[in-house]
Image 1 (tube, rainbow, N blue to C red):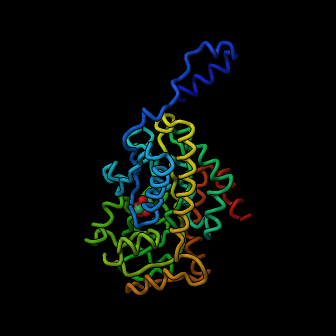
Image 2 (image 1 turned 180 degrees about the horizontal axis):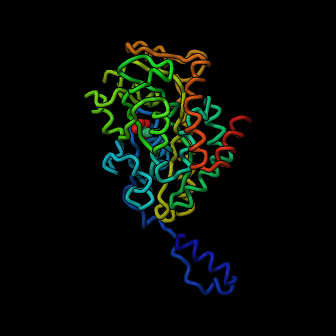
Image 3 (image 1 turned 90 degrees about the vertical axis):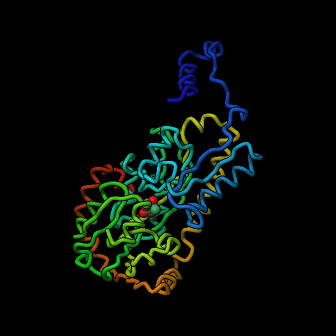
Length: 346
Ligand code: X2X
């Protein structure tokens, strides 16, 4: 609990007369602001999440007349590339703010594994049903209890699988493939259930591992695949299986938040909401519709793109049901049920 909240609690307990005698927490004033607030991201512009972070900083600078200067630090450089430490670093105040993936924060916030449950979300409307509904609110409450202030959602996207060996059409095609994954052990479990050989590493380590062939494949949104030129690393097979999607969360360290005046808190929050909405829009550009343009774009790079039939996709769903059941217990069966209901009613 922050000092101001503790004092507020005391004031309530002591009644108004006593409260007026209490030394109140010093009100935040703009004079106390830092010269710069650091926003952590894993990948920078022109990727959607770098664009989201930049938009957030730009709107806040404009609307506070420069009182609050936010700067984007991509490449998870504020945590030496170790992206799964980002949440802890933000909670401890080593970084002020982040636009972070639910995958990277899930080692510390178990409930965020929800979005990594294999084949939970069939389409974009399903992502929205979670982030914009009661499930999203509940997840934000959980984050708030952990010393960060979540403000808005953005998007990395549906994660598709690529590899250098062969087209993947059935779970058997993944047999023995060395796959780079990141996040919580849920990813190890999913790829193990599919017969692959998963190994955890940060994005900073994944690129060299793909280059040398230390790993055969990876999974990431198509925006990262094309803009990071993953096809140039020998990844010439992509299967569009939409097995999980990672939203991004715009959040601020609690003490940094408390140091802002209420007026500036409102500006930072509103700017986050607008930057997040913009981020979702750019993340989905070229990815939606009957024939998403991204497919032709990736094929034009010389990559074989497999689009699964519903029956083929079902085989992957069936092969990962055990993992889904195990992780429902870990995440919280009632939260998973609420998510399934939100998706069913989308
Ligand atoms: O490392 C990844 O795969 C990335 C960039 O998508 C995340 O940070 C989750």
